[in-house]
Amino acid sequence: MIEYQTSDLLDINGWDVKKALKLFKNSNPPLYKWLHSPIVYLEKSNFSKKLRTLMPKFYSSAACTHHYLSMAKRNYKAYLSHPKVNVKKYFYVLRPILACMWIEKYKTMPPMEFEKLFEAQDLKSQFRENVRKLLKKKQSGEELDVQDRIKVINEFLIEKINYFEEYTRILKVKRDIDVRPLDNLFKETLF
Image 1 (tube, rainbow, N blue to C red):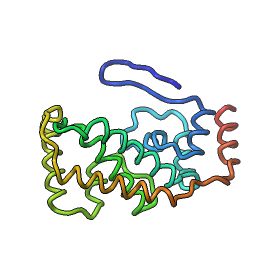
Image 2 (tube, rainbow, N blue to C red):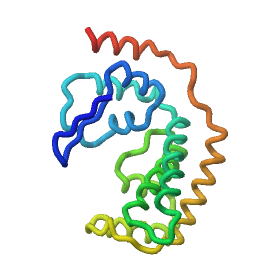
Image 3 (cartoon, one colour):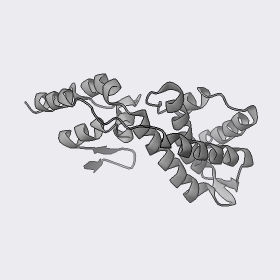
């Protein structure tokens, strides 16, 4: 693992090529998110571009759904199970649940932008209104405010967590994948 912090504003994380390719083969969501990021500060080689072209072959909606569901469950328990909730922490559960919904609907890697995830879903108006209020608070700098739990949001999240726990039981993770393109990319990158 490569970790480097240049300042309070920028930290750099990554993996060596061999580890990155192993993670890529297994459809590692953090790596796939980085490859989908709309913000790229520096890209010196074609390595990332070539990985992006291989994504459809190696992407596993099952692996990503399991990842996001696990994140949602862990964050719900840690942040939203108390009577008072930090506004920002709602997004730590909303985003992974919306990502699961995206994956189920489109069978593709979900976008990083919360608004794209949110707007792509068919959601009840009362729920939408409450999430939009949270977004406004977050955008206006009130994200660290603490407030009472929002019943409609918490009920939605519990319902979706339960749903995706059942849903993931039927998902199959890709096993027999031809890794020769990754082997070739490894050799090409080194030489």
